[in-house]
Length: 220
Image 1 (spheres, rainbow, N blue to C red):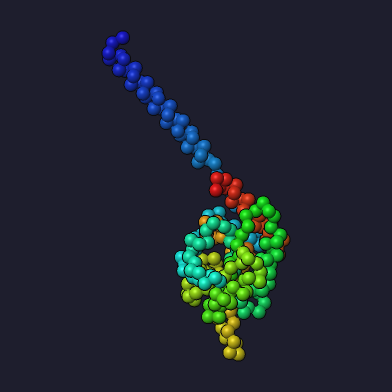
Image 2 (spheres, helix red, strand yellow):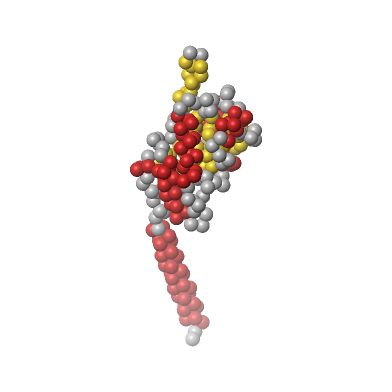
């Protein structure tokens, strides 16, 4: 076999291998690209909207009920229900917190144990000591955040909540959103749960969301 023929055959072999490699690689890529992520569950029957792509929280530095400094990164590692309210709230907040406590009791052992976080809309009165006394009544996994008013507003905004201060007969009243926000273990907004809140439905919605998240990211 002449030298030129051997070179020609070797070049053809390389071309064939290259084409084969590109074909296999393309099929793998197309297969991977064709695997759509698991769609977010439709939980409208539970007044719940689940974000396909979670939303980041505003960066913040606040103080918890233990007097410790808390940042956005400290909310990572567990699922967290967030509620914006205040400890002197006459009606909405006690009912909301009681619903969360009852929800916590209804959760099955096979779902991740969440935290519950009260973001105060009245930092002037809601000191860490006041938050500790208030949240401690509902359970050990209930916590609170207080601090700079504008920082709290930005955090509330990033979970689609608002609050407004007003005075009535010399008494401070706070109008605020009534929904729950659910943060995923990355500390991102994963779902919004609108009132009315029924503990059994909250527990079912939470279970569906965590199961979906696990199916979407099985390795996490």
